[in-house]
Image (tube, rainbow, N blue to C red; front, side):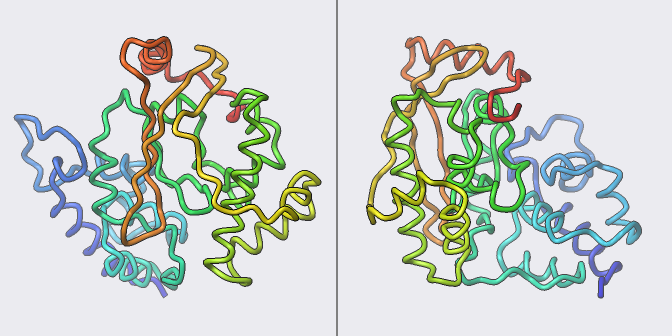
Length: 283
C-alpha cells in the first residue's frame, strides 16, 4: 500500500538536499529555493512539474514502477534509497540479482556533466538505453521510448529494419555477429532464467539470421572503436566510442566523439543545432 505522506516527505527532502551542481545545472545568481526547483527535478525525472508537485503534496494517483524508477534516477538515489522509494510508493523494490536498471549516483554525476554537444547514452548489459544526452537523441532517436524486448538494441537489430538503416550495409554482418556474441556472454553470466535467456529464446523464434549465428557459439566479439552512422539529415558520420563501465553495476556509459576538424566533427556541430530532426530509427 502506498504511503502518500511518507512518499511526499521523502521526495521533498531529497529535492531540497540536491544542489544544482550535483546534477550539472548552473546555480544562477537569484536562486532563493533551497535545493532544486520542482520544475528542475521534474525535467530530470522526465515528468511534468504538476505531476511531481502532486506527489510532494501527497495527492494524485499511485505512481507506476516505471515512474518511480525514473524518479530514482533523476534524484540520484543510492540503491538503498531507491528501494525505500519503491516501498513508499507501494511497490516491491527491483531484484538486486543482475540489477542492470539501476544507475549509480556516480555514473549519473558524470553523465549530467556531459555537454550539449556530446552524444552519449547509458545502456544496460542487454543494450537497453536508460539515459541519452540531447545530441544522443538527435543522432539515433529517443531509444528510451521502447518497451518490452524492443528496449534491447540487439532485439531491434534482428526484428526492426529501422535499426539497421542507421548503419552502412557493409557493417551489418559484423554488428549482427557482435550482438549475438554479446547476448551469449550475458546469458552465460546470468543463467538460464535471466532476461538474456528470454531474449535469446524470442530471437531464435523470430529471426532466421539470429538462429544461424547463434549456432556458431561465437563469444568475445568487441565493438569497434569507430562507429559509422547514416543520418538522414547530415549524412554519414564516423564517431569514436569511449566506454565507461560502472564498477558497481553492469551498466555502460557510451560517449561518442569526432576528430576535431574532421567532416564528422562539423556534422556533429550542425546536428547539435538542428537536433530536432527525427533520425531513421525513430520514424
